[in-house]
Each structure stands twice: as C-alpha cells, then as structure tokens.
Image 1 (spheres, rainbow, N blue to C red):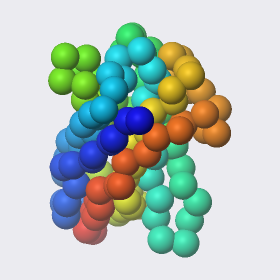
Image 2 (tube, rainbow, N blue to C red):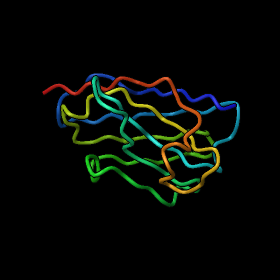
Image 3 (tube, rainbow, N blue to C red):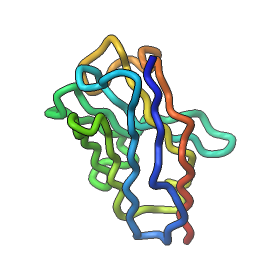
Length: 125
C-alpha cells in the first residue's frame, strides 16, 4: 500500500506560480512512474505531467507544456509540480498518482493504481 498526500495548492492570480508536493508513505516510490492529474468541475480528469522512475524522462500535456515542470526527490519519497504562468483555466483539483508496474514517464492511465486526495488550485483573472 502507498499513501500519497498532496500539498501546496491555493489561490493565486493569473501569471503567478505554485509548487505542489506529493509525499508518499508506506512504500518507496523510487522505482515507479509518477503522474500529476487535474480535474475541473464538470470535466474529465486530465493527466498534465508524468515522470519516469529515475526522473530522467518527463512528459507533459500540451496545455501545460513550457509552464509546468515535474520533478522528484528520491530521498524524500516526494514528487513535485512547479506551475508557472498560471492561467484561470488551470483551476482544478490536482492529484498525484503512482503507476506501480511501470517505470516510464507516460504509462497507460489505467495503470495508475494509487492516488492522493487532491489539492485545490484556483487561479483568479
């Protein structure tokens, strides 16, 4: 079992930045792919970033490419999402997830098997 806890969400003005953290406990996540997802009201959950087990490979949704950066700290068993140049359309609940059978940065979404509870990000115009 892996427990994931996100933090760092909040209210920010358009153009601002936030850094989300996802702390894992119960098992090391160092060998597994991690992903960040978001879900806005009335919309489907969207994967926005993924990182490989080593941290050497990352992938992003087109909607956030060039603005968001995913990273991981193996020693802290934590994954981060640095969000810059935020837009009102980035407003959503953000979730992290681990794909316990994959090491690549962009596994099938169905392979993410542990999820955090989410953290709210609100971007005002």
